[in-house]
Length: 226
Image 1 (cartoon, rainbow, N blue to C red):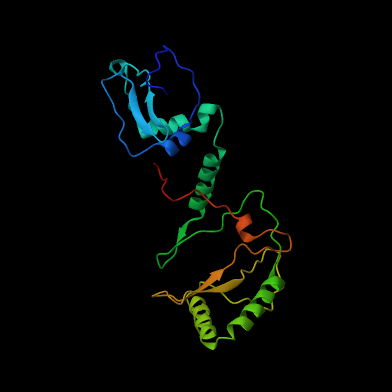
Image 2 (image 1 turned 30 degrees about the horizontal axis):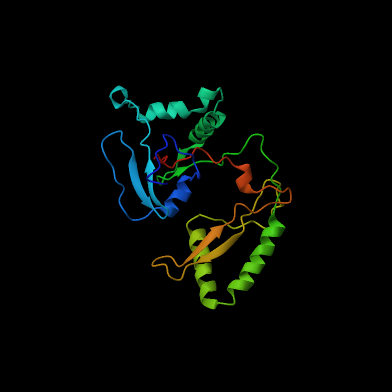
């Protein structure tokens, strides 16, 4: 820009976007005059004079405040004519859970499994579970200490009725399903270094797993809001 140019309007030679303008700026502070006056900023190309633009009338600006519940209603799918059927389904699952809920003489609360309707066909998976057990046993025996710890956990669960022995004399039932298990070892853990994890995602011959046949139920975690 020629400072001595007397033309009323000067032609535009270059247009810079915001990302490009930051590359040509310098550390020199802009020179700002009165309210509404143009301001100047020193760039690598020299001084640039920029219009302040038009500001809205701040006196006529209105502020509003809405509650979080109002915002959630606004974002609800019902506003768009859609319905969250999963909420109704979760309520039905919860009712099934309550109907099956009992309390034992020892004070423990017990309930049955909540199966999906219609219930997927969950075929017996005994051969596959035994194959995984043999592989696991062979692997654990490579480390005698780990094998003993794993065996102790299984015996403790058996003693506390968490698991039970299978009666080999009974014929295999169609509704029997065996949970394969594996060891999760954390040597740096302060308390439990070895955990027995049961695999409910193991599939049967029908292609379904126990997880796929059971209802998940409603989400019990608190919702996070920003």
